[in-house]
Length: 348
Image 1 (cartoon, rainbow, N blue to C red):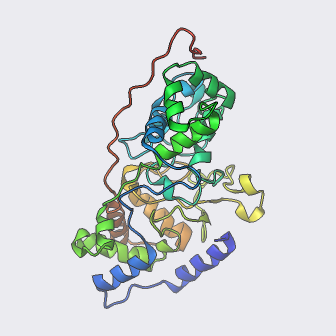
Image 2 (image 1 turned 90 degrees about the vertical axis):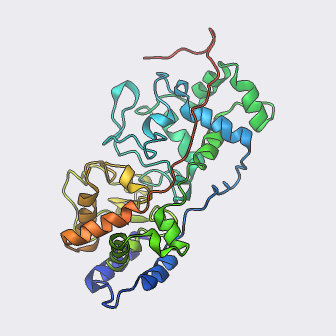
Image 3 (image 1 turned 180 degrees about the vertical axis):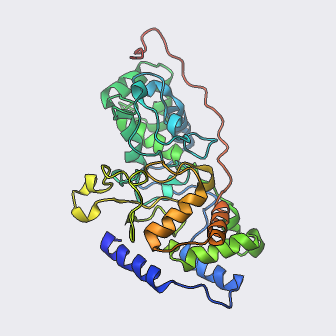
């Protein structure tokens, strides 16, 4: 949805107030919810042009956890997107090469496969393109495509793994690194949240406060941007549809998607984040400046909807967001192929 169209639709919802019907009933809300959201499936989706196999997923898991893909041999994908901690690092912005700080809060890797694009500004079209970005980012892992390949070829144990996963004359390639990591990341989904069970017809899966929070979430207009499987992640929106938050929450130097498109209407436009497992992933927003989920809810009410939410409404919506926490991925640490004397050494 283009930002202007989204702006008009969100303003319409805000001005209309989208009041909750006085004769509120959970069956009515369930019907509305089923039209706006979908449960997380039990199995990960297929990636177009990148068919999965056990060998490829297993290799992707090794690469995800291997810090030797970074120039310093100290940073892995898991450093910023920690499995077991909501798929994030619980930092305002992540630490990268030589103690540099990234410019934005690290989004969760959980359920990222269902997002319309990757990164806050959508500069990567899918997980495969995203997987290569941090590897060559000088602030993050500070390698190059050629050095990643050189590094993996210098670890003898990787050669048979790449050959089994991809075959071909030159199975160790940067493209295959990205493809393998993407396939592993696609498995990091969190099904069976209380909200998923509710969508499937179990009305008791949400308690009364959560159900009322869902009703407010729909009625106030939150679902205009936060819909679909990921309760977000499916479109772009300006941060501050009605009123821009303060400079600390919305740093004026970060114009979001404008850096990608160079289109004036994309200034301060960002990919709408998924709210799946949001209770596990503070701090919030691309700036990582808000640590309290209740505060984040209130900020969104003011900035996006022009709605001054009451304390009770904030509590109810926050309770509903807690019902978006699903079963966390059960991932065992891989045993990585050992380095040898000829393996390229880390650079401080």
